[in-house]
Each structure stands twice: as C-alpha cells, then as structure tokens.
Image (cartoon, rainbow, N blue to C red):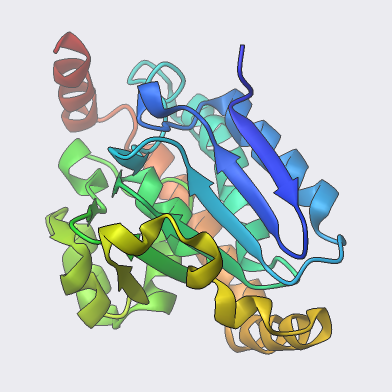
Length: 250
C-alpha cells in the first residue's frame, strides 16, 4: 500500500499528497501525518518547501467526508478541524518560503491548504473555489482568515460568500495565483522553481522571516482559531446536514 504523504529532500523539500483516487482529499490521519512532518523538517537545511499532489484532476478536494462528515456535533467537528488548522499555521510560519504547485482543481479545504502556502503556481485551465458557504459552513481550517491576508479584503469577502469557482487566470489578476504555467511546461519543475533555487538558505530564511513579521502572527492565529470555531458551530445546522447528505447519496 502506497504512503499517502511522502517527503523528499535535496536543496529544497517536497511534500507530496498521494491520493489521486480520492481527489487528494485530506483524512484526519493524513492531517496528523502532515502536522508531524512539518515539525520534523522545520529545521532542515532547505531553501524552500514545495507542496504538490498526485494526478491531474485535482490538487485537493478538501476534507475527506468519511472523517469530516455531517454527523459530528460541534465539539467533535472542532476537534476534527483542529489538526488541519495547525497544519496551515505551520505552513504560514515555516522558516523558509512555501510554494504550492496546483496541477489540478482545488475545492474548499484544498483552497485553504493552498492559501497557507506563500506562493501559488497553477497549471493552465485549472479552477479553484472556496465553496464552503455552499455547504452551510465556513472554511474550517483557518484558510478564510488567511485569504484576507493574500488578496484584497473585498474580493476575499465576495469569494467566501458566493462560493464560486474561478479559473487560474482570473485568480492571477486578483493576486491569489502568482503565475499560471502552460501545460507543456508544467513537467519541468526545475524551471518553475529556478529563481528560488538560485538563492541561499540564509537569504530565504531572512526573506520568509520578514514576510512572517508583516503578517502579525499572534493576531492571525486568533483569527484562524475564531474561524475554525465558528465553522464548528455551524456543523449541526440543517443547511450543512442536508447538503452533505445529498452529496453522500450521490
């Protein structure tokens, strides 16, 4: 059986989510593995950290509904969401820049995970959506709070409220995607990250440190915590119960 979370390291580190048959949905077990891995590698001598996933259809479809299902009460929902909130915060505060390679679409928690990374490169013709409001809830991992740090506040509110899917080119104009990569160039990872590989570890640490200082981390953590708690409070709502059950019945 293949490992669902793997890690490789040379002059930079690569975390690989390997669950293409489930659209790289994150289970509680995978969240725990990601959290432990980030703790383990945070002091490794790497220039930056890549986050990528398997397959071509989806970067990440969010939380696995076998774990993040509709039958959880508020307390259980909060506990289930908590680990991925920690994962996102560890990515935000990771000692060197984090780069997300979006080879496929991302929904819900998948967009939260991508937003936690510092830089996002997307393959052309991919689409992304903070769709949680369509499920009767909010982003549960703190990714909505992070979105307000990454794009204009008015667009963050619009995207989170409407729950729309947007294509990569549109989101590049909005500042969420940093670069859209053509399909015929996507396989050349070394070319994509070339400008980052040329820098020294010390440079990358200082650059990331300056970025983290600009984020006002104590306040940001409080906002992520509040969002996760509010999401859990909506978990037992009729709207959320109905939408998730309809999805599972499909």
